[in-house]
Image (cartoon, rainbow, N blue to C red; front, side, top):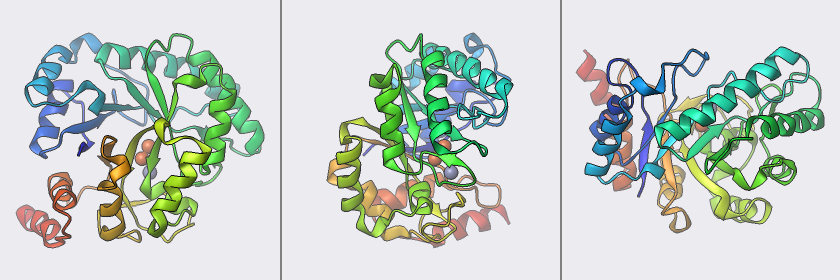
Amino acid sequence: MKIGSHVSVSAPDYLLGAVQEALSYEANALMIYTGPPQNTRRKAVSEMKIAQAHAMMEEHGIAATSMIVHAPYIINLANVVREETFTLAVEFLAKEIERVKEIGATVLVLHPGSHVGAGEQEGLDRIISGLDLAMEQIGSIQIALETMAGKGSELGYRFEQLRYLMDHAKYGDHLRVCLDTCHIHDAGYDLTQFDEILAQFDSVIGLERLACLHINDSKNIRGAHKDRHANIGFGEIGFHDLCKIVHHPKLQETVKILETPYVDGHAPYRHEIAMLKKGVFEPELLEHIRREEA
Ligand code: FE
Ligand code: FE
Ligand code: ZN
């Protein structure tokens, strides 16, 4: 099983620190942002200790394909209303693709975008224009469009919308999907029927295009369109169904990433990964984090 979590890239060790953080959770996969997810200020990649990070990954048997990069949320390719937001998004995404290459990763997760009132069809077509411009130097990188909760005017909350983007983008062959359990639950998919969801995914998108999974519980009921992540087993999806997904025979090779919230300032990932691997819900592990804090 390839499972890990979001880890941070920060001074002084940057990518090497990110790998060390992942190892401290007993993870064999990781997801990073190349800088703060909410802004576009970025450190020069040359200072990010990339070679050391890869050496450490190799030493611990973590493949480069198990290191996922997530683009910052502020990239909104669907913005039809403000031209400068769109231009900024295109430029930033193109640079982000370059950074992914330099970092030595292969998959870049991207939120498709929010149409901010222009309407879904216009938003989707705008995303396609943006991808066409930003992906000119895509090389061998894959962009994994994330399934979204449909909060506000977010696009990508139906598999069909992602399919539309893949079919119409110039570099559609480089588009993949990142399936987020919290998001699809919030979008209305019934995770108690996960085999049906996978069958639907396969017929609409194709299972071979599933690049990675985000494993999160949800604070809200199915169809709430909220996007608030809960710790594994503490939300509306529940441990049982999340565990089934993580151990699904068709997803054995797929990288799984946790993006669950910190508990009293502590990362829950070591415990959550252990529970999921074992297949046993041990809520007291998170209580234990709280006690460590006290
Ligand atoms: Fe995301
Ligand atoms: Fe996610
Ligand atoms: Zn989310």
